[in-house]
Image 1 (cartoon, rainbow, N blue to C red):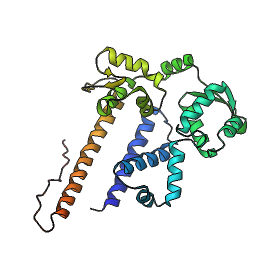
Image 2: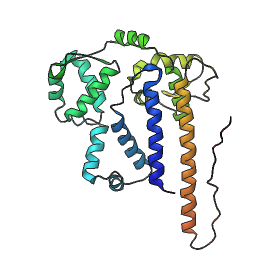
Image 3: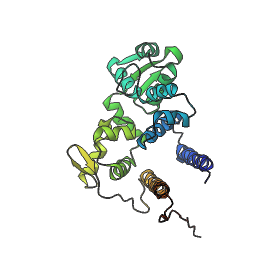
Image 4: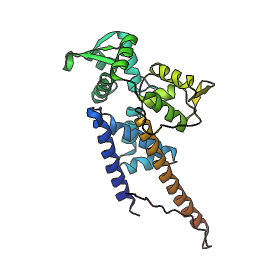
Length: 275
């Protein structure tokens, strides 16, 4: 198997899917953060699979020191260690009530301007922060709780319950903070949806964490298609990963057999199409 060709082909297909999702229904969803997000998530996954940072850096074609710097820069702010730049910047704007771009750059002087601009853009696009003016004269203000509620009603929250439900079902048990990270929004904004899920029994809570024993989006349901797409894609990815893990285990068994016959592990598979 030519792994590089397969990886390139998978990336192309995923980018087609992302482009379709970002423009479905006439919307234009922000995608500026995707490159950084892919880098961080891939670096974390490689580390979770036991790949050393030195090897990971080599896989990315980077020097080890540059790789470590990039991971740290994208994973957390340099001005306030232990918190993401997104979290630190939002909290700062909330505390200041109204703050200029120059003040933001001064406060987060250890973070590069490109990262700050990207986070500011994401915060304004998500409706958590309002911006006025342009360039160096830009001024930012955090949205109040009442404004966030009104924005939620205007933008519509259809599908949020189902997204929370499927994430809890597939990845739970999860707490409020973990759910906020996965949906890229403050945990307190998720409370109404979590309340509905708890109220109708789709989700249970124990010890501050949420779990779910099932997940179903009925055929023809007017809401929840986003969660159904996520659930289907995750099932496909997990199936492929299990196949790859079995291939790796089979290879390791064959290597340790030292010439003895090793039992073959079935690793094939087919995709069937119907008219």
